[in-house]
Amino acid sequence: MSETILVSIQRPTALENKTVQSISVPGQDLWLNAVTNVHIIPTKVNVERFKAAVARAAARYPPVAGRLIREGDEWRASDAKAMLDFTLALSALYEDLDAPESNLPLAPSFYRHVYPHPYSPSCPSLSDGYLWRMPHLAQDYQLSKLMGVYSKGEESTELLRLRFTAKSMERMFAALGPHGTEENELKLNVHDAFTAYLVAALNKSLENPVRRVINIVGYRAPPKFVKNLTSFAPWAHPAAQGNGMLAMISDPLAEADLQELLPIARHIRAHINLARDPEFLERFFTLGSFFMAKSANAGQEGRYHCFMPDEGDTTLNSKSRFHTAWTTKNYFRIFIANPPSGGDTPSKGTPQDADVSFLILSAFKEKFISIVKHDHEDVIVDDGGYHPKVAEGESKEGPQLYH
Image (cartoon, rainbow, N blue to C red; front, side, top):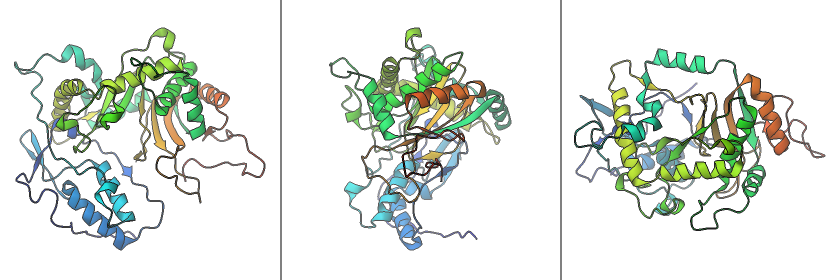
């Protein structure tokens, strides 16, 4: 039987000594679609310790204990907070209630940037250069219609779940060959190689290849990860709260590059870097925030955005522990793999396996599996009968993807 336990927030809170007691919420933070997420705690919870950790974490991020308030077409929060930093702080405090600041996420900044109306005379025209990058925002639906769009788009598809080992991803990175050594070269990483491999394998499987890659990009990455970018605007600083993600639609891949690992990896990285450029972000969210606020203000039933890739597109997210069960056609959901049952959780910084799930057209599922298994025998496919080679003394069943 479940039990609800109320936790009193520790005082004073991070906002209590400030003159501003509520926070304006721009359109980009009004992603109100209902998504169920789970924070993984790989052990039995000590309730009293967890309550104490929640009380202190909520004091640091008081928005989680507040309300979202609408005033006309304006939204304010007497508090609103991105879940990720809060859950990271909660995890650190649960492990050590006296954790020093250095072990917690950056102290939050509650700065909110106000974007101009994109169609006002004082605002430069953005439609030609940016509207094509956000069809998922420009078009919205009533919930019943949205479900119909997904249902039609997912006809004749099957769910495919795979586990790629850290070693397989390192092999993909090595397969890129020499790169990033020249000043004008993009600096690629293992995840660029991994996502490029998924795109290339998909294109080798399909009759009609995907030509554009949509990356779910965290644009508040630390500056050291962004080439030639030495500082962030205040609203894009890593400590800023609220939505820090955007769906970055790439230019089309060249015909000769559709199945080639290195060109795809470079294409992906170039667009991730562009998505973190302050001037691009200002223009992108001037238009995108307008569409998101428009949907949030559409009435009692609300309007919702469709994140299923169009024909000829595929979507990927960065590897994360923030598990979300949903996926759709040609949308690769990538998560850090859970450790094997009874196994130890890898330490921070250790290369880790990755779980991938997506819907693929049934006619091409077996071909995709065959390509992946041919390239990387240690990949586990959760499809009954597809397992990595079994060494002597190991279980013939292999590890389960979701336990």
